[in-house]
Image 1 (cartoon, rainbow, N blue to C red):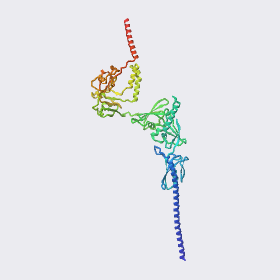
Image 2 (image 1 turned 180 degrees about the vertical axis):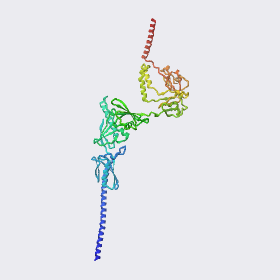
Image 3 (image 1 turned 90 degrees about the horizontal axis):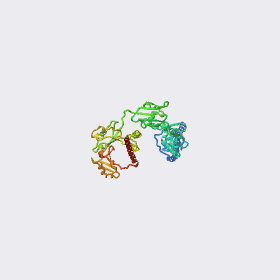
Image 4 (image 1 turned 60 degrees about the vertical axis):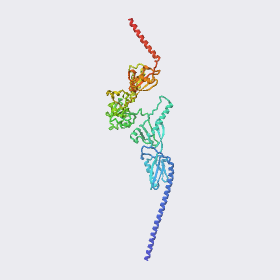
Length: 566
């Protein structure tokens, strides 16, 4: 009986074990089938997603554009909006990059994931939101969401020109201001042509430092392009946003200015900004000149009560934040002991021609000739010249002053004298009077001149010719013959022509360009022989001479008769 009970229990236990094993196998098979079905469904969904997004990607690829940028964008500042183009990347079970476009409602739509609102979010916030949504569907994949092409939108410009311009979120005022100013200038020209009034004018002095961006929410951003290019700080040249109004004042330089002068790179008049300090003004002048004294800066400011200038002395390092007021005049002083960078040029028959340094008011002609290795054997001292190049603006001013002072002389008494004087002033030559033969052969130190900056010392060769021109049969160079007089050279040139004024033949010296009568000077190599044209006096001049002679004779006769009567 017990044995039977034992067999029953053993059989029941075996059945239970068999049932458990059967259930485990069944569960394993069921799980495998479920996983296969899930994977098949995921694979199908993924293939469906890829097929749809690939088609969308092909459609949107043509929209990709490359924008020049000055730096990588800040994802915490960039605001996402309609028409931004992104890449959605899936890496893992799926490996695919798909293009997505933010639609006009501000969302992106991802099949099998859904619609995700991203407009108005920063790029960082949009990335977090999209990655989270896609990850919930494709949890085994790594997800990326990157901006590939920023959108385009319109901003309004308020200036002389009223217009809308197309920009991107990566466009700064500095990038578009050229086009705005060009359009404004074009309007000015059109208005002028339309009215054609001589007194018609439109100010085209556009502000570059007091520009304003009015945002859609009413906030304002100030644009100072000079300050931006000094500091590279985005605050002074911010990016545009949808709905911006870009306001550019004009006529600022004539009524809102400061001046910076002295030892700076670019002195001048600049537009004033209410936030200007000393550091900013030095930046406007492009920084200090190499000879500047940064501890000696003067600010000249008008005292409104007395209408006189008051002076404030500043040190750059200690007073960078000194507040500058409109109409202030800033002057940066030069160092008192700096060494000027000056030089002279030697050319011609010198052993080592070139540019040589000299010291201010201290280097003489002999010194630089020695620097250049002395003369070549072909040098001809009587024809050597020193040219002095004065500042062009100074020369013009000096010439004008001399012409103005003509009224204070007692030599110019006729129109002919005035014309001759004006011609001589305008044709002044920058030659320095120096006799090379006396200096280098006779050691005459009175000829050892002090050289100036940009002087040119030209060491000539022996020309061995004399140039004959004017009223001769054959103008040109005649070989030089030592001791020969002017007649020799005129004969070699074919003799006088029919119109020659033989009695007024002149010798022009090569070096001094002085005019001399033939019997007063010896002709040297390089000199000129000039024969003027015989021009008969005009009738009015002859009449004037006759009247003068008659008047003189009449005066003499009258005087004689008066004396005789006594």
